[in-house]
Length: 154
Image 1: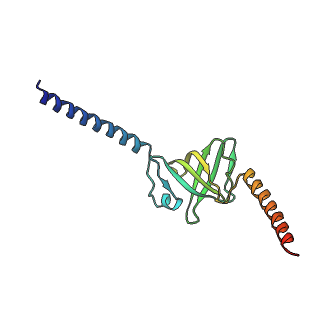
Image 2: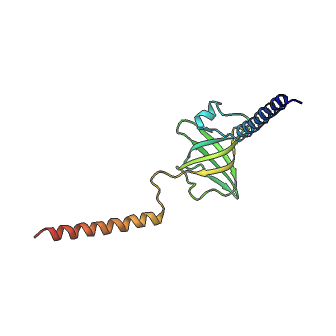
Image 3: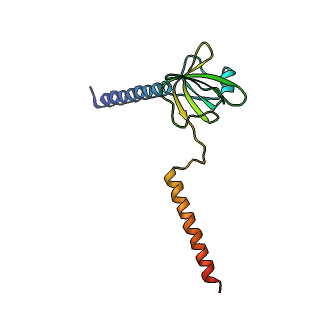
């Protein structure tokens, strides 16, 4: 082979390898892609059939039923509600009226079978240690302010 032909074979080989690698990456990305749907979207049949997706909303009040490790509850977005079945240990933040995201598939019976349940907390959450530190800082600033006021007034 001439040097020119060797270069051409090398370039074609590199392009083919990059193409195969890109195809593998895109295939893996697509198979692991999980979309989020609200109960209204699921009820409108916008959610994929036979594929995993995430269902998010609020846990409907009075809907949690426990039978050992099997938990049944209803997720609502105040427009539509979807029943959910989950087998496993729920997160500590899981409560009625609080936000939840469940990942799983919609069964033929219309019940969402969750493989994973994530409890959402509101944006006002603060770790106890941080709250205590802020409280102490606020108390010391308040005392400091009183001291400054007393010292500046005759």
